[in-house]
Length: 429
Ligand SMILES: CC(=O)N[C@H]1[C@@H](OP(=O)(O)OP(=O)(O)OC[C@H]2O[C@@H](n3ccc(=O)[nH]c3=O)[C@H](O)[C@@H]2O)O[C@H](CO)[C@@H](O)[C@@H]1O
Ligand SMILES: C=C(OP(=O)(O)O)C(=O)O
Image 1 (tube, rainbow, N blue to C red):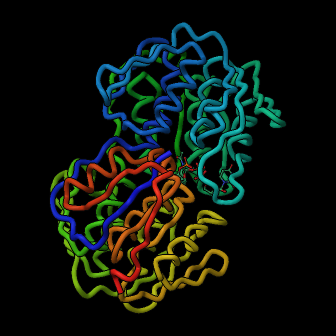
Image 2: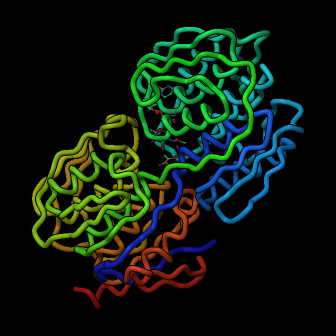
């Protein structure tokens, strides 16, 4: 096990290139199981969640080959059944996509309950409702077991906007008989990317990116070569890194439209945000202003950027209010941020942040993936040294985070967890 040691208060300047989107790549890898020929996926991020899903596929007799670090070939022609019940399945959230993909392909799926970040309860009732509407029977005790004699298109009105259920119903419906209509569908870029990928295999999906998606079932899906979109959240994290270190970072290989909610908030806070074709430059400023933020489904401000922007606001003079409207319990990391001296009160889904003049280096835990990113951002801004434990959470979703930040002037080391730490508070007061 390793931890991060960050030597703080070094402004970051330079360029960083964004990898493929974790949450698109995971859905698309699962979707590949619906094709009856070889699929080649480009721009796959080199992160632990992907490695984990690839291991799950290997155990299911799917042949996976990396043509290079970011290009994955998936050959699922020799898969024989729809069973995925391994420890790797329980390690991540996106393994729920195997339900829709295996159901679509075999009319039968047996998949262990998914894991992922702990934000309180993460139900899958809307996924199940969708599968049942298509004609499947679902038993979700111990393991999730689904079967259908045939899948028939249906109308599904989602009770809330859910990314996972929208994609899962799409996966189950592409090979069903007739037309499926998903209403109140999620509009996230990774929903659109998954639909575009399925269409590249010969599916007939219209409306992805709006709140009504129509899927006309087709008889079979062929192979294809497809490139995953850039990661909105990885890009947003580096944009916040520029603001919190008062640096100047050009984030390359992004789709600026996907970043609109994040760019708008950073501008409101006072940073300069300059968009070009496929890049965004963010320049931090000395005087920043507090803001109100409410996390919302796309195109609103993404919940997966909430911990990172809270880290930034903890350094902005004045009172900022953050309303987490997607998850019940996504402020667990605030206790860790307070160890840096941040002044934050949490009441249920609302955090009131009173910006402080300086964060001070300390030892903290990464309690989940984006919480880990928030700790790194706070460590970059803090005086002195910061130690971050549980770095494996960060490795789930960020490719080469340390190297990318160090290339822009940060000083971060990965050290053995057993290395004794010395918090040099006296150095920084
Ligand atoms: C692997 C992946 O892509 N993870 C993302 C995905 O998670 P995930 O797909 O799990 O999140 P959802 O969009 O489904 O959840 C949104 C809200 O709907 C609720 N809900 C969801 C499904 C359901 O059947 N019943 C139900 O009540 C959830 O409790 C939550 O309050 O979208 C979230 C919201 O953008 C992100 O934070 C996660 O990073
Ligand atoms: C919450 C996230 O991932 P997961 O849903 O896989 O836990 C995330 O990507 O921020």
